[in-house]
Amino acid sequence: MPDSKGRFGIHGGQYIPETLMNAVIELEEAYNHYKNDPEFNKELTELLNEYAGRPSNLYYAEKMTKDLGGAKIYLKREDLNHTGSHKINNVLGQALLAKKMGKTRLIAETGAGQHGVATATAAALFGMECVVFMGKVDCERQALNVYRMKLLGADVVPVTSGTATLKDAVSECMREWTTRIDDTHYCLGSVMGPHPFPTIVRDFQAVISRESKAQMLEKEGRLPDYVLACCGGGSNAIGSFYHYIEDKEVNLIGCEAAGRGIDTFETAATINTGKLGIFHGMKSYFCQDEYGQIAPVYSISAGLDYPGIGPEHANLHDTGRAQYVAVTDEEAVNAFEYLSRMEGIIPAIESAHAVAHAIKLAPTLSKDKIMVVTISGRGDKDCAAIARYRGEDINE
Image (cartoon, rainbow, N blue to C red; front, side):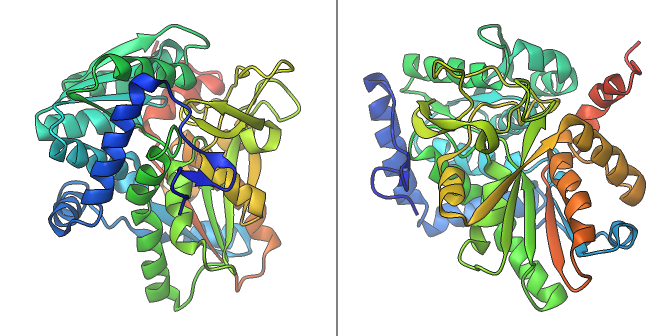
């Protein structure tokens, strides 16, 4: 748990303008009240189970295991959730909290569009107004999700500043929040930003590891040796790791987007290339240029295309509790195609980064080892982009 100032080691905190302090304090007080409220937790559990379709399956990937010839591989199927990713776990929790706080309007940032779709879905369910900020570049490469958000009743605002990607959508969303605090809740999508967001998002996403731990004990009678998850800001990864953190025998591996390689400027692998800094309300590791400014980052994955990482991940790295590896575009695309053909599961290109490292790691392990890989979302949204990467335009 973070300290009272929201710090995980030296990371975290509340580096925000005074205009937002009251909103953040109000949110922290409300969360501290409702997180232990039996009625709130009953409502949230019903939403997760009856509406989102939890618990998600822990699937034994038998063909993949045999093909790679090493560790036994299980897939935690967050792609089977309503809206197609893990994002709905956090959004249902935050939307319910916002409703209890008397808010009538949700705003959100989105990269790959899955968090935006989940937020628009919850807003429709609860009868709330919804505005989603999305980088113009991401709007173009994730056009299907833009349509889905609009279909659900959300206003989608293309952001043209900066690199017109996820970091700029976050900045615009924070600016918007300062102008309408009274009726608006910022439904932040990852374990980042000022305290209490990293803790709130983690707690709502921790359902992933709570389930997988129980499922693994039921299926194998023991815990896995490795847990792998893709990691941008880090919400699905921290959700996948959280209930294993105290189990020191379980290796935790976050898979970052290396883009065209960590030896190039076209990368988004924060732990592998970043430095300590302050941005978007938190102290953590960020990709920076020679002058300490936030550097432009790149990944084929819009959801991992962020120049920072959540403060709890930064602390897990500092303490050595988790390892963070870099996975290139080419490796992720190969894994996207591999899992589709091997198991009949088309993963999100974000998730494919974790699959790629599993493909590399599993053959080096003995057959008595067990690995859990979180499939954070489904890959429908990415098919056109992967086809373009392979030289085919399916939209012609």
